[in-house]
Length: 343
Ligand SMILES: Cc1cc2nc3c(=O)[nH]c(=O)nc-3n(C[C@H](O)[C@H](O)[C@H](O)COP(=O)(O)O)c2cc1C
Image (tube, rainbow, N blue to C red; front, side):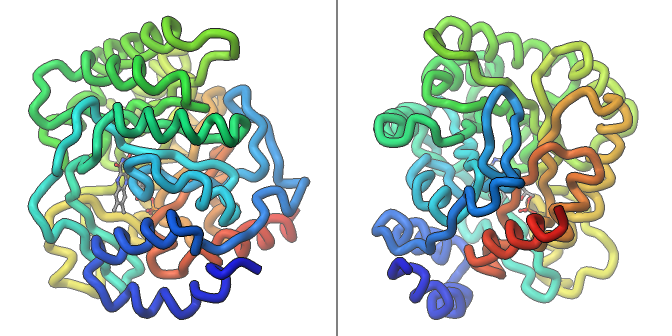
């Protein structure tokens, strides 16, 4: 048992007493200091699977936003995740929106954030990922790409991200669905998506040699109009991208949220209140693509049953983030054990 296994149950109530973003910063520091918990990602061989040309030790991944700067991939894989997605990473560093900008809704098990792609930029991430790759070449780390707030040329930003990071990425994500960068979600129109994914694929093909190229996935919002979902499904089916991540946070506020005051904060809502909306979007995209496009299901997963529902709705892989805020990292082996029992 690692020190982190002993500290985690004490740490969680302490962290909850802090502002959400400070708690997150402390968690990342503790993980970097080796205080994270340990659970084997390959504890249940029956959960291993192939997707995107990769062999995943289990289907449960850490979704983007937790490790924005590629600092704690190792500790999160050592906590049991089958894969980790870092980012969103923009070409240049940027500070994001003014604080406070992350809010917990404990009674709803939800989170609202309007971080706005705060991150240290592609060069800092590249350095860390390269060092990590020397140590753990086979670990599965996806790289989620965003654009700088002040950039006038979105395609150029995603191209730069891919140029810098494709060679250290297991897969790449074109994130066009965060609600906190003005104009970003408009890039979900198929004409824009085509430009962005082509730019990313071109850059990737130039920089990745000597191994199969990383897949390019598109991460979408759960708030798309039916016509946009249909167009994206057609685009994906026609090979415009290699997979979809469904979904990012929602700008909607479902009826019945208990924390009425916090629910009014601007930003993207995640966690349990997103589960139903994102799972329904996933099921629609699975139907629209005839199951021919591999998908990562994300949004509100907090139990093995939730993960199973994403798989049943058409996901090949599952990701989570918000439930960690309330349950702590012991949640990961609990989900894996539960999934293995169901098999
Ligand atoms: C604090 C926070 C920051 C996030 N940052 C990003 C991000 O930078 N890029 C991204 O694609 N998604 C980001 N997300 C969205 C998550 O990756 C995920 O799609 C969403 O939270 C739904 O999953 P969950 O309910 O398990 O949290 C963020 C989510 C949270 C809560």
